[in-house]
Amino acid sequence: MSFPPSIAERALLECGRYCCLCHKFRGFKMELHHIVPKEKGGEDTYENCIPLCLDCHAEVRAYDSKHPKGRKYSPSELRAHRDRWYNMVKKGALVSRETSDGSSTFLPTRKEYNDMVIETIESKPRVFRAILVGPHFLHPQWLIDRRQKIEPRKSFRAALRTYLVESSHDRTRDIRLILRNSEPYPERLKRLLKQHEVYDLIQDMLRNLYSIFFEERPSTISFCCMDPGHYHGVVISEKSCFVYLRETSISRIDGGYELKDPSHVKMEADRFDMTFDANFRGLDEETNILENYIASHKQLI
Image 1 (cartoon, rainbow, N blue to C red):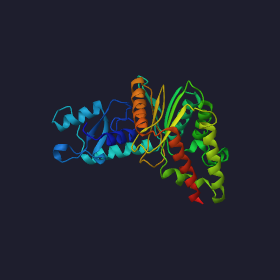
Image 2 (tube, helix red, strand yellow):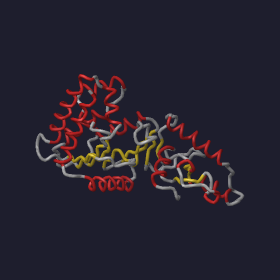
Image 3 (cartoon, rainbow, N blue to C red):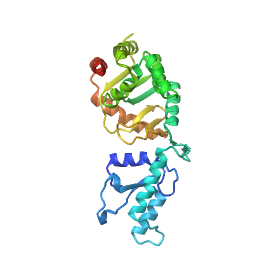
Image 4 (cartoon, rainbow, N blue to C red):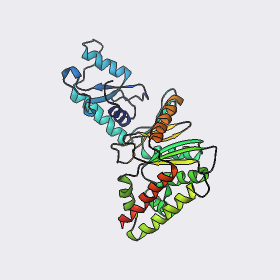
């Protein structure tokens, strides 16, 4: 598979790790096929790839090689199969399904993904890693309640904050957060607030920041304010890693899957820690950056 890693990750997320031809869930046993073969001018682009299971890929490639067991698909047919399957995944038209060896579970809707992540948080994992779009775990209860009325489902924010408050001085827990304090967060915040509430929100968030990280020293939670770019892992515990389905880096999560194979969980945790260690500037400096970021929301007035 010669496609760049970012293209491979995006394609495998969008198909839910199901084959776009036979529609069987294959987990990590997937390959990317060039819709237009490279020898005919096809490029290593997202538009020119279709995720296939090993069996279907072998049959399609066999036809390309004039093998009698091969199956013929024109480029337009392959694109149609791919686009139709991607749309099914996005609409949540599939049933959650585990691989035969239990190494991963596909979570086709945002609700199923959200509920499984919350279940993991409520189990109070000893090891926890998460990438968050903004410091929403610092939101006051009145804002969480307002969001609940708009989206009546279990609150990831509330579950995360409860876990962090309980864990902040528990020496048996190892918690790291990467905060993507980028454009989507204030835009989403603006839709929830009235202008006269912005000042109260800032003060409440700063109070929550101090209570979680500085009520007693030292806190067992570390956070880093940076944008890791294209990075699919969002929540990692010692037992599982959750990967989301998302069309772009700023669009909403539309489902995902849970990886449970210990080798894959360790790989994602090591990848997270490598990124964190390369960007962490010390808790005092990260706190100063976060304080300034929270205070900057007065521009929403």
